[in-house]
Structure formats: C-alpha cells, structure tokens
Length: 258
Image (cartoon, rainbow, N blue to C red):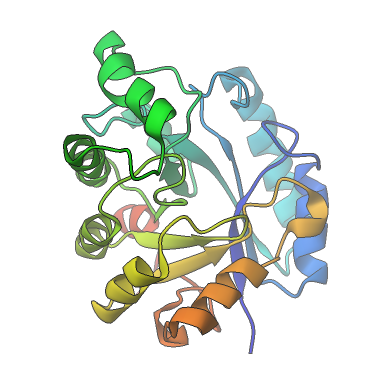
C-alpha cells in the first residue's frame, strides 16, 4: 500500500532548493507514479515564479516527460489568495498553461486592491491562526476561501488555516461541492484534529502532499499519515492513496477519457 503521487513540490524557480529534474528523480526513487511542480504564484513578494521563467519551465517539463516516461509530470502553481473577495494571482489566460492549480493563503503577497491590505492581509498578519482572530475576521476569511472556489477551478486548497483562521469545516464543504481536494500538508497541518474529524465525517476527499522545498522531502508524507492515523480518517478518502486523483481543472478541460 502506498501513495501514488505528490502534487505540491517547489524548485529553484521559487522557494525550493532543487531543480525540476531533481524532484522528478526523487519521486521516481520514492516509487511515485505522478509528481507536480507547483512553485509559488506570481504575486508572492519574495518567492514568486517570474512570468519570464514560465516558458523555460514548460520546455524543461516537456523534455523531462520524454526522458522519464514512467512518471506523469505536471507543471502547475501554488497560487496565492490575494483578496478577501476570493481573487487569486492568476489570470483566466493563465489557466490553459497550468496542468494543476493549488491555492493557499500566504502572508507576503501583493494584495489585489489596497483595501485588501487593510481588511485582509494586515489583520491576518497580526492575528494569524490564533484565538485573537475576531468572529468577523474568521467569517471574512471563510468567505474569501469559498469565493475563491467559486471564481477559479482550484484543484487543491493548500494548508487551510496556516497563518489565517477560517471555519475549516465550512471551507471543506465548499471544496466537496466544487470537487476540490483538501490538502493534508507534509510540512504542517494547521487544522485541529476536531476539524479534521468533522471534515472526514462529511465525506470530503483529502490529498496528501509533501510541500517539499528540498529534494529529499519529495514524497515525504509522514506528517499527513500521522494525522490520518491519529484522527482515524479513512484511507478511502485520500485521493492519492493507492489511486490517482482526478483533478477539477483537468476534468473541465476534458483531459480524462472516462
């Protein structure tokens, strides 16, 4: 029994230490059938992918697909939630070039509007995922996640409640409605065990990712596995456990045959 894919990894094109090829080789050595390269989105102020690099990344990925035909390689982005209105830092014209779309909250992101700095990023920067977050802020954050899922074909919501406090169960219900996976992140899981228990009980599908920023961590699912075992999440609800996920954006592009 094993995981078949790792869909959240970083490279030197953003905040990672390895090349795309090094991540692919590590995935092969770990016995994975699929890997996604998902560097940080365009509006992250310190670790962003530069648009000028995207053509090179795509060319490299296409070459590696022919060099390593035994593994599926996806080139996507970990996009950034950039607005309380559910905006992300991608354009509609970007979608055709993305094999996979992850989105999550990160602190150092250029806001969509100036008002988003004062009403969204600043209070979350100050209070983060703490008990000091007001009910109003929690609702605003929850609404931002839900609007994100309405606005974009997001395949995976990454590390819910990392640096931000929202109603995780409500966000997960929206994920289930839209066909988006809830990530169990390989670096940290910021949802409580109680939240995970509620989400699992409602039939939401999870996906386990390494969020690897170094080559040796590609395929490392130890943190998600610990949570699965501790909470009692059924492995049948883990989309990359002994099966390959079917991603929302790829379904909408008609890339699955059945």
